[in-house]
Image: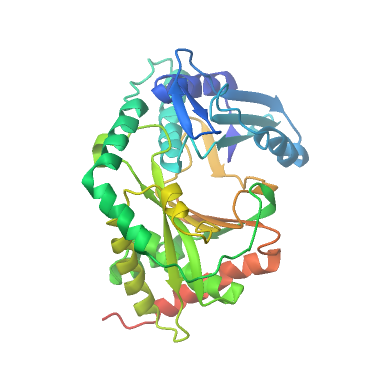
Length: 377
């Protein structure tokens, strides 16, 4: 969510989002959860955009009521926005999307385009062109890639894998009661993480995945972890501006040696990722069907360049989004705002408690500092 301070035009904000959404063919898709299929309809499904007044103390309860209502993806858009005016010059904008229809990259691009549209409307200028690439074309290209010979080799790779790490929980239910804790690595740590990642020849994504794996191992008292991580299934620049769910997941098994060799941890994480990404054509559902152990109980997600919208006449900051239900036992979301790493840990109460969730942050910070003290070879 976002906190907006200043003179806001809710009618123009709604128009901006609806215009951007209507320009993409995803606004006409229906998603059938029962069999995982999707179909294209002639009628556009507009975004649910609600705007009302609410006291500061009522914001979280109001958001929970709006956003925890299940989506009916055969009849409504997979995106909801709720604008709550708490004071004459202050409002909170909440945004939620169904993960089966929209990925984080798509949501970030949609926010960028809606910002441009709102600013144009405020200036009485024509709306900018929205050059979305069709989701329908992406789905056809993906089918062709999955039918290619490389896809069979990818499936053989995952079929031959042996996952030894036990699941975090023997059984769990999706959408179980849980909580969210938030931590922000400030500008100093943001720069430090990027410099250390570069020095060890890994991306910030892999650097933080390594650090959080170490802290998870300590907090959960495990030396083997099963995690799932996202990988884009877009075809490079050609499909960069597709609105939709264009992400696959890959399972990662991490073995944490009792010898705290962080340089080796980073090197092995890089090699593990390169190995896995070379066999990324296989859908996660297919990989899961090959193995009896649940591969997705701990999920690590990294969203690059999720910035606050820049709306004319408004000061904008991230607003901690309230949740009471969590899809997986542990979900770690890292958002790169280009100034900080804004991190959310969502956890089911059967997997973690508040103290251990907060300890994940302090332990991860400690690991970063330990890596910073290493001599780079």
